[in-house]
Length: 138
Image (cartoon, rainbow, N blue to C red; front, side, top):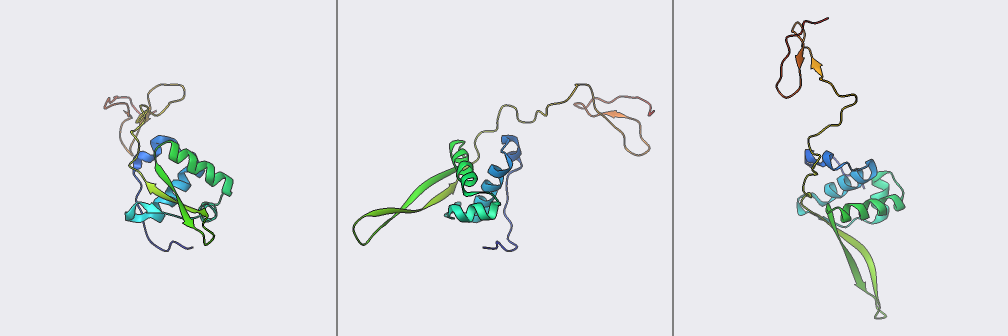
């Protein structure tokens, strides 16, 4: 299945949930498949193929996304002619994003200290919380 040139939106806050690449990709694929209906039902084979991962990795990603509240998975069943019932697929409902983690907005720094920026022809300025420094460029 080729998605064509359709576009879909993801909230920028998604980056603060620290989803590993496969989980991020699977979530993105489900969102793009669901569109505005917020529901889709791709097979695990389809998810894995579109996300360039194994079906096992796709299943693991689905489990994590469900556990963390990004999606809701509903098993779909079909009656068989012999009277038995079999699971045919899963439907995936895209949920509102969970609350932003407490660490939102905090980027770990290495070694601490203040970071300085310098535009062409200007003095160095501290990028820390509105503080400016009148340091002369070296």
